[in-house]
Length: 412
Ligand SMILES: C=C(O[C@@H]1C=C(C(=O)O)C=C[C@H]1O)C(=O)O
Image 1: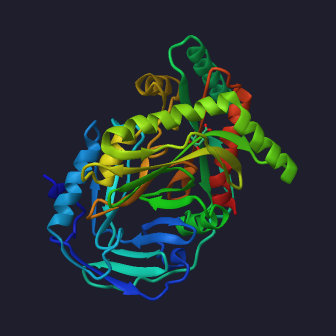
Image 2: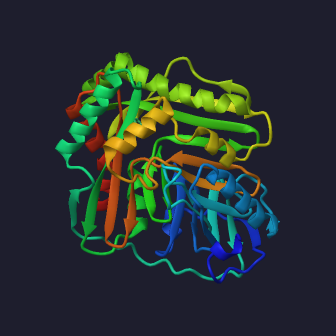
Image 3: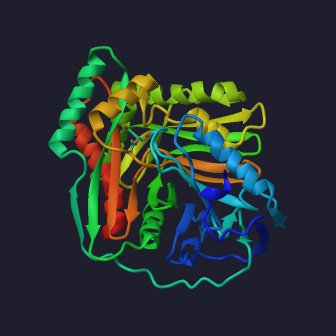
C-alpha cells in the first residue's frame, strides 16, 4: 500500500550515507533551482534537494501517525552509513501538513541530498549515487501584481466583526482569523531568492521551504532532541515604532495590554494541555517575553519539557496541532468559526512544517509568514488572534504587517 504512493524511480531500500564535511559557508547558496528544501535559523540548519521519496499523506484524524509509520517503514529498511550520529544526520524527511486535518495536501519528502550545519559541525547526507547538482544564478521574478484572495479587505473586516460578536455572545473565547492575497510575477518565482531574502531580514526566524510552501516563521511548534522538547509560543502582536522610544513604548503597551496578555494565555494553556500528558517535566514561564522582529513584535513564551516515553517529534506535533495561536479557544468551536467565516482553504498555512530524522528527532514550526509558490503565482497568508475587544481595522493592519514578510521576499 505504501509503495504505490511513492515517487517513481525510487530505489528501495534507500542507501544513505552521511559524512562530515568542511564548512560549506552560506547553506542557501548551495541550493540548485529545482525542488529546494530548507530549514535555516541564524545560518544554521539544513538545506536539501532532489526527491528520493515523496508521499501524499492521506487526510484524516490519524494523519500524523500514518506519516510516522510510513517513515519508520521507509527509514527502517534503509541501509544507513552515518559517521556523524547527531539529530538531523542519517536520512531525514521534510514535511508540510495542512492546517485542516481533512484537507488534501499534506506531504512528506525524503530529499536525495541534505547539507547541514549545527554548532560548528557540517555534514552531507546523500541517498543513492552522488551526482553533481548545478547551482544556477538566482532569477528575479520581475514585477509583482497582487490581488484579493478569498475575501476583500472590507469583507475580512466584516468577518472579524462577526467573530467578535460570537466571542461576546459567549460561544468561544478566541478565534484566529486569516486572509490570503494572491501574487503574480512576470517570470517564474525562484524559491531560492525568497529564501535568501527571508534569512537575511529575519535571521532569528525559521526560514523554511517544503514542497512550494516558503516562509520565515518565528513560531517553533516543537524541537525534539532525544528526550528534550522545546517550543516557542507566540500570541499578542504590536507594530514596530518609528524610532527607538516609540518602539519601546509600543512593546511596553503590548506587555501591559489585558487583551493581548489574555490572548497569549489562551495559546500557552493550549500548549500546556497538549504537552502535559506526554511529559515527565514541563516548564512554562509565568510571564511572557517580548520578541522583536523587523516587521512586528510579539509576546513570546519559551516552553521546555522532558518526554516520559519514547515519542517521536511527529507524536508531539500530533498532540499540539492546532494550538490556540492559530486555532482558538476552545479548539473545536474555534475551528468551526474559522471554517464559517474565513471562506478559504488554509492549505499548509498555519499547519506544521519541518523535518524529522530516523531517530524521531526533528524541528517543526507553525507555517506562518509564508506563501504557497507555484510557477509565477503565489498565495500569501496572514492571520490574527481575535478576542472580544478586537477592532476589525486594527486586526486588518496587523494582518497586513504580517503579509509584508512575503511581499518583501517577492519584491526585495
Ligand atoms: C496567525 C499568525 O500569527 C499568530 C498570531 C499572533 C497574534 O494574533 O498576535 C501572533 C503570532 C502568531 O502566533 C500569522 O502570522 O498569520
